[in-house]
Length: 160
Image (tube, rainbow, N blue to C red):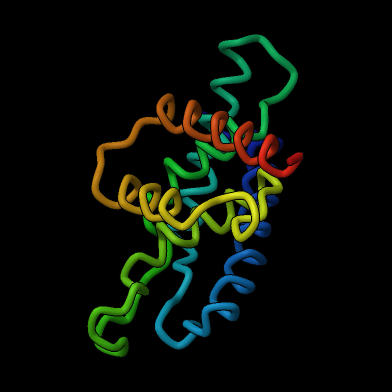
């Protein structure tokens, strides 16, 4: 498959947005000394994300993609490729930093969907999502449904 300039530019924009979110995330959790965002894996992840969105747009003959669908494709590829590398030898035992790819995925998705995870999402739901991302077989269709329901539930809770 030939990758045209528009797809490369879209992947570059998504990669840059991920880098900005990653910097905020690792500084917020103070884990920058334990983790590194692998550029090669990030490139592969961003391109896969863009290609899935493009296939979706082409198949459905539409002009764009809904943000919960984009978030689902992001989740799928980020937890599949795991571009955040962890220095296990530097972290304390039983530290959740080993789940950094899954935790970052939620951090980024909540930003993409404009969800305040502290206000709109209960801790149990976050735990279930992290577990699902880490230990269950994923497919984009299931994640699309999950993100659609999450976005709707968060919006209705925010309106209360």
